[in-house]
Amino acid sequence: MQPEELALSPDEGRFPGALLLDLEVYPIDQGLSARGVLNGRVIRECVRCVVEYEEPMSVEFEAEFRMTAQAKKGNRKAVAGVTSPDPDGGPANDTDEDDRDHYMLAGDRLDLADMLREHVILASPMHPLCRENCQGLCPMCGQNRNEAPCGCQEPRETNPFAMLRNLQQTPNSGTAKAAGSPRKPPKTT
Ligand SMILES: [Zn+2]
Ligand SMILES: [Zn+2]
Image 1 (cartoon, rainbow, N blue to C red):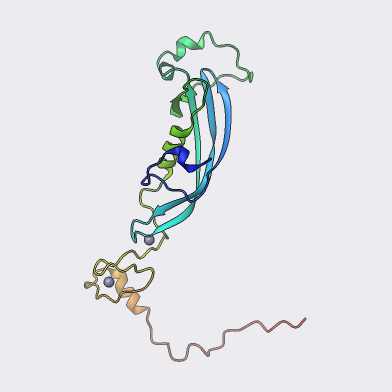
Image 2 (tube, rainbow, N blue to C red):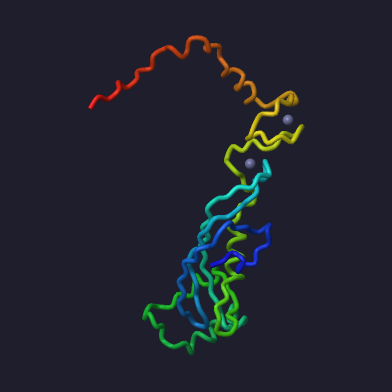
């Protein structure tokens, strides 16, 4: 399907290509149940460095589409008495229905766009990061520190890890390289 069909605002999701919808629909009491997964790639903006990046997206969903709004709650019991036998023959299991999402079934068309849009939004991270250890922008000059260090003098660090970092620069820089780590001999076949 085309991303435009979801009618997402740019804040909610932008997609570089088509989305793949893997859908399974089966009839229920007063409508249809739909479940599946929406796959594609999504463009996000990193909250630290404000750079856009692309990543795979896979949104699972399960939702029920009912003919009438009232069917949602309350009168389910009244309806239960007159239901036709379950086509699957299995016992009807009502207990887990309420934590599924309900949508209106308008006419005879199953309109998935609203439901999918909501799931895509819910699946989006609150604080997207281009990478786990994104260095972000320099608070002083605005340089993207993933691309290059800017050399700004950071304010005196009170962070204990800063001290550790200094300790790690131990003075074995002179001779370290030649010390032979055992190398595999070149294969002669
Ligand atoms: Zn970033
Ligand atoms: Zn800077």
